[in-house]
Length: 235
Image 1: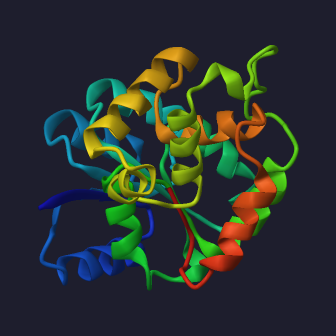
Image 2: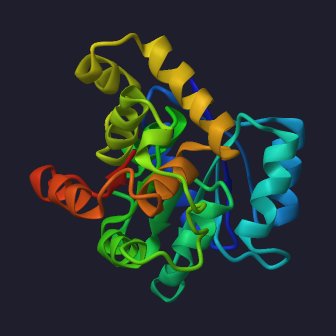
């Protein structure tokens, strides 16, 4: 059972999200709330698997709140709800450790699958934000620059293969099958990469790999064209 807290100042969003998720057999809504205080209280007392919250709340913005939530409930994954005028903030959100970015204007047709993707360690970007984000990632802007002197040779071929798998939206099982290794080996390699780079999650690893030249943005765009029937970007 995937436990979810829904935090939004928009009561319609709370009702819609709660209704859609409770229709599924594998979701349970643990709590709802309207601001950052409620989100942090949920993280401290209930430790849900997922918190879905507004990007901008009345008392705090999600990128500032995300590290505080992670300190209190490290296993809780975070998804934010945004509007069109907040699209430029997607990289700020991901760099803060947020794993999902849902655009309200896209609707919630793929809500359940996006929450499952984040629950299993991936990231999700709504379709309307995807191309906008990829264009920003094509140039090393404000997210964080790659460290000088770090090259693909710093990582094993298996680690590089895992980078590509994450970026193409593969699950751990698919990555393991493609690389002919066990799922445990995939997860061990990811932990090793975290130690090498000092990064904390797969989102940051993916961005790091892009800016370090370990993976190529053009190839990722090609992957989107090949598998572009889905709503967003999963990793």
